[in-house]
Amino acid sequence: MSRDPSSGILLVLSAPTGGGKTTIARRLAARDPLVRFSVSHTTRSARPGEKDGVDYHFVERDAFRAMAARGEFLEWAEVHDHEYGTHRSEWKRAAAEGRDLILDIDVQGGLQVKKAEPGCLLVFILPPSLQVLLDRLGRRAGERGFDLRRRLETALVELELAGSYDYNVINEDLDGAVDAVAVILASARLRPRACTARVDELRREITHWLRSTNVHSG
Ligand code: 5GP
Image (cartoon, rainbow, N blue to C red; front, side, top):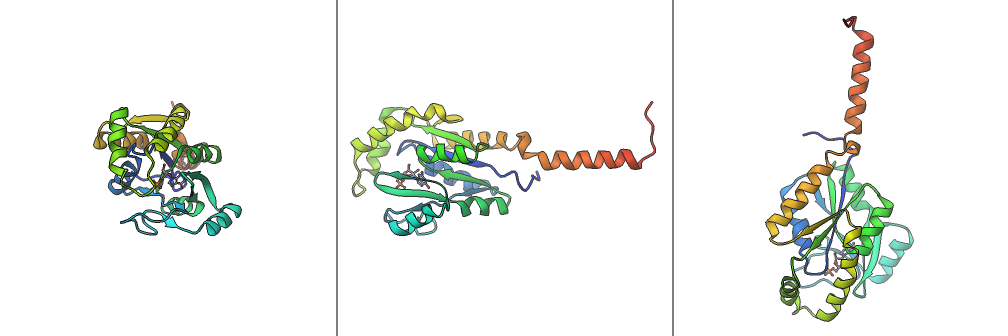
């Protein structure tokens, strides 16, 4: 289905660490050509296997702060002692390509995006239980500097904000969660704001037809 070029959707996914949001966002972007995954800037260093420009744009703290001071970020936040931000060019590029942009960011960032772009969609991914969350965090516990207690304390604060989001998706199984987010996106693509150019064009065409065609009703 064709779409208005200016109707791009900003879809924010947030979750406590281990919620699975990165995988969900990546899978959705991989299966829907109209979705672009937003690659954030960060001051943390790359983990083994991570690629600059693919997983993150890895930058020095000074460079990050200078970009923030110039207002180049749509949102940015400090998470676990490192800075993370969504560069405005990500959104511009997606809009130019006629694609939606999916952001995998923390709750502080999500709320900033809502303020800047009220038409965005905030989706909070919930782990189905503490046990599942612990299992998922346990798998990452080998990471250097990983602190389970600190992650859970952060999760507690983040969960308080789940209610401020537009949607909550329980990540019981990955395929189901990806499908749920795809449904949210599909319904957002049917909002009137996504169709204003089409409506305007139809109105212009009907007006033109009425003026130029000599057909009388009755
Ligand atoms: P990690 O270092 O494990 O990749 O990410 C840590 C946290 O930072 C995750 O909750 C992740 O979603 C969040 N994050 C990643 N990129 C951004 C961003 O651009 N902005 C904000 N606010 N948070 C981000």
